[in-house]
Image (cartoon, rainbow, N blue to C red; front, side, top):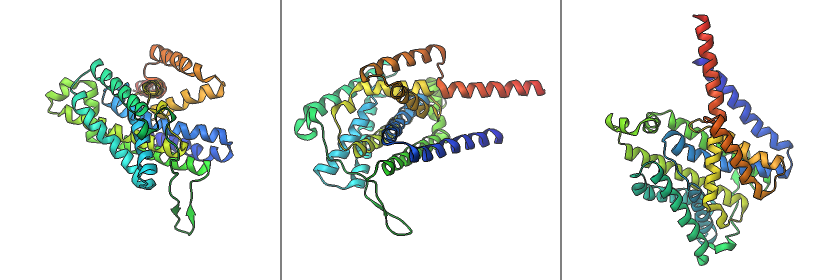
Length: 327
């Protein structure tokens, strides 16, 4: 047990070290891509909490990304609330919307819940597109602020006006989200999420209030999505209705399944893989969805647990085999 924890610690330490060092030597294009991968990884982690651990399939998770981005934009540019109040307001509004939508939606099960989330994303997309006076319609919104400079203990201020500093800012939130997700699913509350995913009826029989747990999972997931939306708006400065389109939710679902639903590393691995491959191969944008769809199909058929899930199963099988040989 301690040996496995030691291995995991060093694996995560090496990954984080690479994530810190590589951008120092990368060009602007690669750094921009890494920023987007970090942001979409946060969205994937938020969906993984709901789908991978609680077993609730959401097809419209992009709606929370869009709500977070537009709420941040409206609070920061129209109401001039400043960066941090707008950032927190965007996350809170996204969570509140998730809570309100979750109350009726989570009473449904299976495909009905998935269809409701898909409809929710479509409604958000129409509102963003049609409410021109508020959201800018098809033209979107512009002028979102970057984070305020932070005072440093040794004097001076840390500003976020460069691409590299913005990358570390987004990476910080990715690490924070991953740690929060890890602590949550390894807590007693997280165990009830997993119990619901395994057998909801049995969990109810054992005294778990499944509706409250699912609603909590959905709300936390929406907050994470809102954080990702605010980060995207602050980084990209410009946002458009495409961000909230339900097809983006399908992309996120593909990231989670390919990486490994129900694993800590899976959402990040899947996002990195499916966003990096089309860029490395220089695939034209309209073919990216096709390529991702083919990759998703191959994983569902040949490796349904995803990359992280497959690696985890491989090591567990290896440990059991060695244990049997020793005995």
